[in-house]
Image 1 (tube, helix red, strand yellow):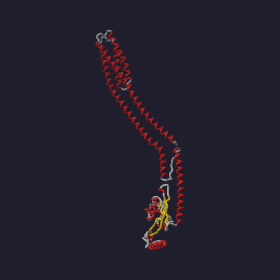
Image 2 (cartoon, rainbow, N blue to C red; image 1 turned 90 degrees about the horizontal axis):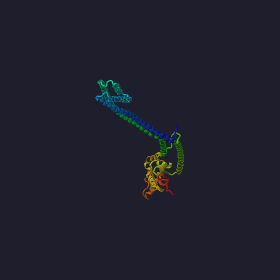
Image 3 (cartoon, one colour; image 1 turned 135 degrees about the vertical axis):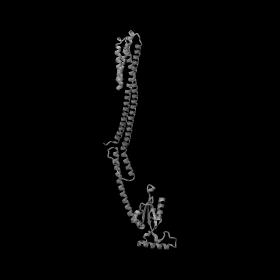
Image 4 (cartoon, rainbow, N blue to C red; image 1 turned 45 degrees about the vertical axis):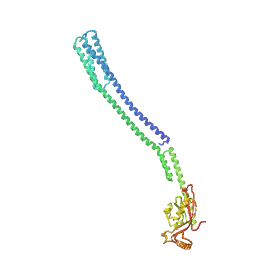
Length: 415
C-alpha cells in the first residue's frame, strides 16, 4: 500500500495516540478492578461489622434480661411476663440478625457457628413460650441460663473467626494492590517498549528515503554520476527521487559531453603544439605537469606516465625549468627568455642519434669560441641535450588555483 508522506505522518500520529489510549484504558481497567474489589470487600466488611455490633448489643441485652429473670423473686407477676416478652423480642431480633449475617458468609466454619447460635436462639424461644408452665420451676429457668451462656460462647467463637476474617481481608486487599501494581508495571513496560519500537521503526521508515537522497547528493559532490535513487512508492518523496534521477542523468550527459569536448580540445591543442616543432609543456598552479608535446618527449626520453600528473620535483624535469616555473607561479606573470638547460640522460650516451652527435659537436665548438670571452654558462657539452631559452605564459583562471602556465622552449631568443 502506497501512502503519501503526509498520510504516513498522520498514520504514525494516529498509531501513537492509539497506543496512548490503549495504555490509558488498560491502567484505568486495573485501577477500576482494584477499586471494585476493595469496595466489595469493604462493603461486606462494613456490613459484617455493623451486624456483629448489633448482635453483640442484642446478646448483651439478652444476657442482662436473663440475669434479671434469675435474680427476680416475683416470677409470677407482671414484671416477669414483661421480661420474658422482652427476651422473646430480643430472640426474634437476634434470629433476624443472624440470618442476615449468615447470607454474608460462604465459609463453612462461620456458617456452622451461626447455625449453632440460631439453634440455641430457637431453643430459647421455645422455652420462653412455655414460661407460664415453669413460672416457679427452677429447671426451666436454668435452661434459659444455659442457653444464654451457649449463645454467648458461640458469639465469642464467632468473634474470634471474625477477627481472623478481618486479618485475611487485610491480606487480600494488600495482595490485590500488589497484583494491580504488578499488572500496571507490566502494562507500562510493554507500552514503553512498544513506544520505543514505534519510535525507531516509523521515523526510520520515513527518514530512509531522505537518507538515500543525501547519499546520492554526496556521490554527486564527488563527481560520481553513476548513481541513482531507488524509491518505489508514488508519493512526494517518490516525485523528488524521480526528479533527482532525471537531474543526475542530465549531469551525466553533460559530463560526457564536456569530457568529449575537452578531449577534442586537447587533441586540437596537441596537434597545434606538435606543428610548432618547439618543446612545449604545460603545468598547473600546483607545479604538476599536465601536457608535454612530442618534441620535448624526444629530448627528455621519458614516458607520459612517468611525469604527467606528478609534481615536477618528483620527475626528471631539469632544475632550470622547475625554477622558472616556480618563479612564474609565485609572480603569476609572464617570464620571457629565461635560460634553460636540459642535461642529456647518461643512459643515452651509447645509443645517441647522429643528430644529437652533430649538436654535441656544434656545442663543443661554441664552448671553445666562448672560452676566451668568459665562463661556460650551460655546463659541459657532452652532458647537454638542449640549451636555449624559455617563455612562460600564464593562463589565468577565476582563482589562482585554476591558473595554468604554458612554457615554450627555443634555442634562440624570443623576439
